[in-house]
Length: 102
Ligand SMILES: [Zn+2]
Image (tube, rainbow, N blue to C red; front, side, top):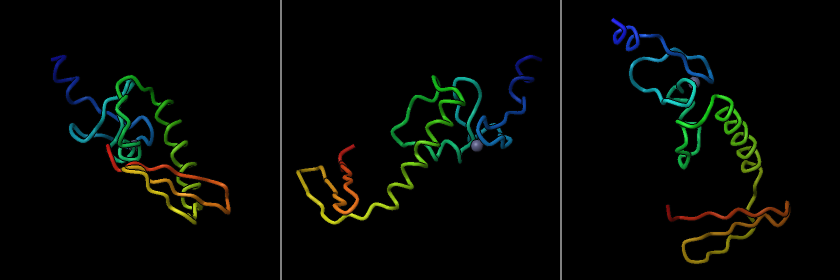
């Protein structure tokens, strides 16, 4: 009995509250994430299981702030050094380092 109770237990996304089915959810430390919230996280982020909902929220906020800065980024010069590109926005005094390697 307990097994099925657990399996069909209703789960909600810890971030947006979307009801989750059996598939398409990501386990985090205290609950689950829906596909959409998980998709908003960095593709390099693999610490789901040790992350709480607060950690995830923090990372989402951080990424949103970063995206804003990125959208106002206006590269005036791009330097290439092997697999690494350095983009300069000389007007704003910002630089972005990108790497094509994984
Ligand atoms: Zn969600």
